[in-house]
Image (cartoon, rainbow, N blue to C red; front, side, top):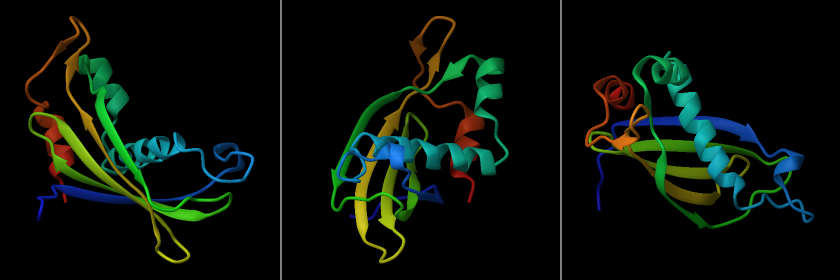
Length: 140
């Protein structure tokens, strides 16, 4: 099934020793950290300061759902890319991810996160992502 992708961003990283277990395999929870790093890098390279936006607007974007599928493990010192595809950004932010080992382009992990907009003054969930955030997520 074809899906719309509003924006794609790819970030290259290296598996650090502290991200691995005794067998030098990446601990499963660290893949979510890699997802977040790629999303943060996308905003940074767009010139959009999320922390400043939070301070000025009072909006935060908590993750409400995550899913990961582990295809092949990353190991200590592996160079890899994490690609984020924004597939929804009007009512919630939905991002699909792929982590691939750079040496052979092997798909290691795929996943998805979903986020909503919440006003911190009353912790009410909004039914639409603010326009400024939508604009960043829709930029090509």
